[in-house]
Image (cartoon, rainbow, N blue to C red):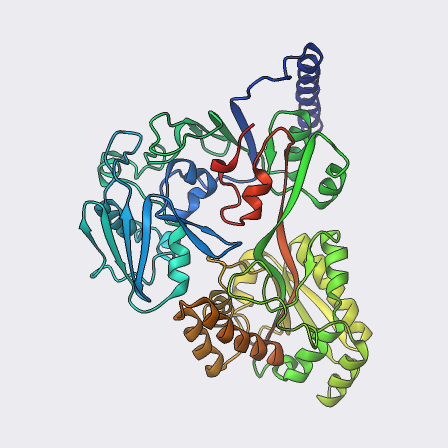
Length: 508
């Protein structure tokens, strides 16, 4: 069966290549205006409703109050024409007048409030509006909305950049919560949705703003990385997400396909078991392990040297950071001699067992093997214990599981350093590190709107986490994309590091 599928794919690719060659030979590709963009993505979460799970496709139909330029850390009004942060807990936004959704329903300030309240019904979406005080949030008039938080929370303002908006009239007209019939104010309207296969859109010709440059967009669900690359090279798709490192290096030599690595908010990390049931309860042991592991080796062996070693406890793509924080002393740069000295100081005997816990994923296995080699070099009896995902979810939250350190690649929903640490130390149950001073500083970071003040607080957070090292960031991960070089605007879209696939940037 696999052989037959492979042959079919080869035939499809051959036909596509022949057709492309014929067009190029006849000059049909020269100067021709393209009107369709085909995008290969790896998964479909089964809904087009205005919830987090509709992902990038959802932004074709639904818009948000504003966008975030993660490069400049600025909010850019979208449905709003102006944003007035009255104080740390209050935002007054003026809605653009005359906006209608694709069904012709006028969009007003009350629809903003309705959209946010409706989002509370979806578990993941609700996490993006957790700090809003809905008793005080209100539409002041048809085009003015006042959003009030329960307490100062910079993370909430970042998260609102992701909350999709729609009209109450459109939602109430839908029989399925817009899972299959989304109606929004965005640049596109849905024309076809075949779950697990494709999502197709055409340009919203009545869009209130600048119309999309590309008329038709098809999102094609292709789970296999190699197949996504094959369809891109054959010309069946114009853009592919999540390509393999080996393909990225190959595409650097292909003048018809461009590729890019975009920093993400995720980083590959060691999570230490800081409980009394592990030798990693001692900060000296955690420091020893940190000095023993080569970040460069992890980047080279696991990620084909495509990403960058971490220099702070988190990704360099995060907001509210300064990459020079640890420049003077380094961020646990490789130093085996120092590692051995720290182990001796902690009284750890040669041959002591250390267990590295991981889920059974290729990148995690490879990372664990690099760490295992480093710890064996210290004289420790390092073992790797791999778990199936369901078992792993239970094991990692048990301090007595026997795991001394675990490998994770945590992301961050809003991209703010304070919230990244909150996810690690307050929401995560896998580190077992108790430090009230750290938690108080995280709260202070999340409650501080002033950018300069954030840096001061976050530097203190950095220093504490670096000193005690309950987690160690090894490599700053990234997204790897490839696309037909005729598609314009991708580099600009990625440079601003907002939504990784924002079609408003793209054209032919």
